[in-house]
Image (cartoon, rainbow, N blue to C red):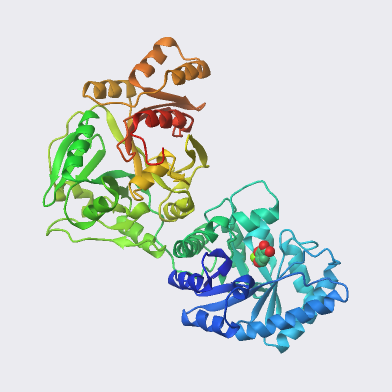
Length: 625
Ligand SMILES: O=C(O)c1ccc(O)c(O)c1
Ligand SMILES: [Mg+2]
């Protein structure tokens, strides 16, 4: 199946857009008229630019306010169309998208519109063109693909077909299964877009908030299943109007778009195996069984500091890499690696970001399958030389230039610690059992990119976005987790550098992992042991404890213990959540210990403002304070 994307979906001038679209692997492009009109060159030159990049023009659009007009407007509309057909011949494309009229002059009437389209079909045929009719969700008389199809059916012309656009259908909550009865050869092109669920008027929602399939909340998979069921085998064309994308990186948005289409077709194939999906099958999404390790890049002085901090939390120095300057700290199922090598990716990560948790190792059911899937979805695989006898751990590049390694039990990768490390016997520790969650910070503009990256490659789902109030601004936070809770990531999007999250991005030149949370089954015992080992926990305001005492009706003794140990507390109706924080590093990195009880699934978002306030009093002032 051919892939295509509208020029409106990408930022930049026409040349930049085409370059990014071709580089991301698309076969075709929809030329949006304004992108052509604002280009300082002839239609022939545009056609050549498209060809030179190995692309074809899938459709020229939009042609507005055509059908149902009274005279003299009707004749004018036909003249306008003829001029555009001439232009299209120069551009080198034969399909024009006619979107349903929004003109107050349009008269309505299915037969009138069908007659207009039939007549235009005759002209198109003579000029070697075809027309596709699309129902805009806010069209004056036609705003439903079922009506558009009825008009196309009655127009009864070989050169007149239907255009389906997932946004217009799904935004109006029209059952996509109504598409199944349309003949596939009468669908001339299919446009795809998703959108977040927001309650607003259709036009504004469409023009500003569309996003790539899989990034929003619409059921684009069911829409596409219905399209495939018709036998349609034309291009899948993204048409995404999004304010953020218009100002984003052309290359990244184009790659996200291509990834979204590959992922969409993979979901269609899995949801309805009997359909003839014309794209290659992919290995299934990586089933994450746990976080196997977190690796830090550091210089010697910071490695000392990190080692000390880990010991104060009950980690033991548990091993050394056989050939590299790499130390393993271990407690329960948590493996923390500190890499002070002077070459390789760890060193480049250190040079770029300073001391940082630049690599994450995930335990999956099938490491090679997960990599294969990632690469098919446009992720970059990563490898660097290893010494003889050591393991080459498969990896892809992730957020902030970091690395995600994959290990599994089905290969030698399951013996990583024995093969690559000389390890010591386990020590008891302070009760920390596993990595509860990994918090990554990114620019707000990149959140959808990483959401799609994780969701398309790993078997995870996203939770609703929550707002984290920071005195410097709002940080948007969204969790990405699997069913069993063995992988929990939180993505925090900062849109300025005055928030703690924004400061972290600036201070580390875009390192991603800002904090790590470890789980315990008894936070009071862990906190007590950590305190005795010299752990300097983040102090929390008295006011906070007064508030939770009142909010949850907690008794004095319990509140006294929370207060003394600097533990934050939350309930969600199904269970309880306890949190304890370290102080932050100068750059804003920190560690957390949490205890979940009952069915608590959240991350203590209500406590975040108190944590942030406490971090602010205890941190050195930032450059913009
Ligand atoms: O917003 C619009 O006007 C518009 C134009 C053309 C389309 O294909 C579309 O889906 C929307
Ligand atoms: Mg459209």
